[in-house]
Image 1: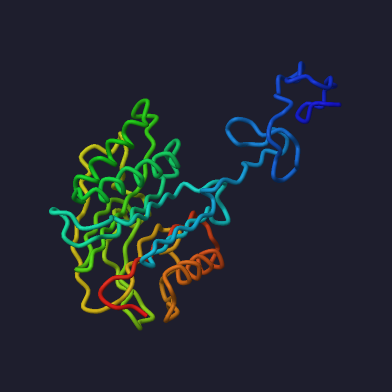
Image 2 (image 1 turned 60 degrees about the horizontal axis):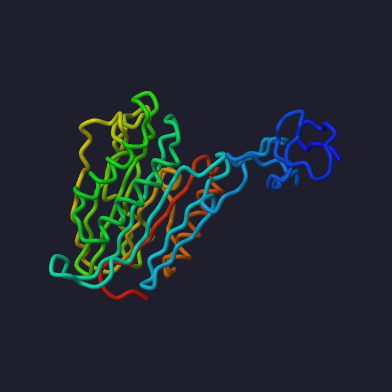
Length: 284
């Protein structure tokens, strides 16, 4: 027998390689099959980062809302995060029942960007599902991301867009370059409901993180004049939407999958996250 990493001789029953210290009963790599995956999820023989559930996932709610996320074709991991929740029954402070969506995109130049997006999406969605307002949920998410930092030089960061959809319309909040669009029923186009917090050369000028002091969310209320779909997404999708003709008469899940295929077929240069929520009356 030999160590799968350094190939030094080992004895059956040993737990570690005496030459390099590698654990001999580590998980096997999905690519080279060596029992050499370390605690960080990387194969110590071939270097592959092991696939995770987050790299490609779908969520569907009973009411039809659906979300998909994918690491794309050029990224080693998925630094996007999404949360899609049914807000439950009406309460005195929340007359209609509601659907909550939060989509966050980890800022690639920051450390542990995947952790930032995950904690922001989870924290904000839980707050919105409990009936808190958009500004309050954004503040809680901002604090949660800031707590991840060990210093201003080690500050995880992410963009943010959230939507709360009721039978009456939707409320939106955002900071950064993740977006929301309105897709009217029967239309092959879309209308942007948010704008970027980015300068022409592409740098993001608003984000969540310990080094983002003073950032306030932009807020908007939207009431449609007919049925359609609210699209919430990261730039891994919207950068490929210019001139795209949306296919008609699709369920939210079918359309989300089609949009993901479009993003990947167009190059898939970034992580892709897409959430679609029915809004504005009866849907087919």
